Amino acid sequence: MRIPGLLDAHVHMRVPGGEHKEDFRSGTAAALAGGFTALLAMPNTLPPLTTPDIWRQTQLRARRQGLCDVYHFAGADADHPDQLLALGRLAPALKLYLDETYNQAPRYTDAVLRRITLLWPRHKVIAIHAEGESISTAIRLAAECSRPVHICHVSRKEDIERISAAKKNGLPLTCEVTPHHLFLTQADAARLGALGNMRPRLADQRDVDALWTHINSTIDCIATDHAPHTLQEKNDPDKSPPGVPGLESALTLMLTAVNQGRIKMERLVELMHTNPYRIYGLPAQPDTWVEIDPTARFTFPEYPLRTKCGWSPFSQMPMQGRLRKVVLRGKTVYADGKLTAS
Ligand SMILES: [Zn+2]
Image 1 (tube, protein in one colour):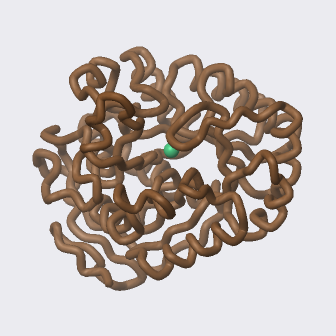
Image 2 (spheres, rainbow, N blue to C red):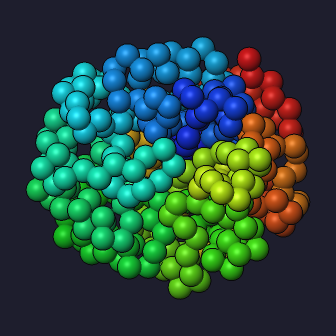
């Protein structure tokens, strides 16, 4: 069975500054091994993608080294918001962090947030890391500044319900959830230890149930928030960084959900292809598709992982639905565990 090439609109490729965790070669290899033919990468790198020069250099490196299409968010430097005028002409979208996460702990004042938002092109999306109270700030920005706002990795029942209500009021809001928040809970976090540490944190079963309740309505996209760190870094008792890899497990997890009757195949394609392309306005890839065995059973991972970090919170999980082959612009780039892209 064929489905279109998937777009993961929330990944951390770790370039520049974290190439020992992931680089464009290993990250795009992991993408192809997971059925993704296009990626939209986050700007919280070292240095962050908050100037046109760094943004351009990084985009160029992705074009040279990547095995599939890689786009980049722009980041916002609260002290130099003027950079946003140039970045707004280059980047497909802007990312703002309202809550603390890896490499980013900015606290924007309301005035700075409004200024940043109004400097960004009116038709381009502003993606926001917002949890709990910050969700209200994100919704207010969409309402007051009439800008399309996308809320990243929603994980809590209260948060998805608040977004649902705001969308029903006609605000220009979209949102995404990650596979780890759909398939893992705090109980798994206890079992996984450092490997279950991510932002937002894993939640309760009631939160997971609420996300599934909204999977056919409020939720617009599945995005992995692929955030690799080495095992050595994760196991450091003093400063274990939050984040888990997700590119290679997302499709097979969602196919497993299709087999369990929790979601329809057409909806999977909307969440992982149609909607992210529409929200970010990215160009379609001609002659591009993914071939799957929709009901084949296996234990994850089927082949050695391609991500440089080399581990997954889903290791040893039974899956149903596997990827066979990826064709990008008419060329077979991945087939049965083998990369054939160049
Ligand atoms: Zn992220």
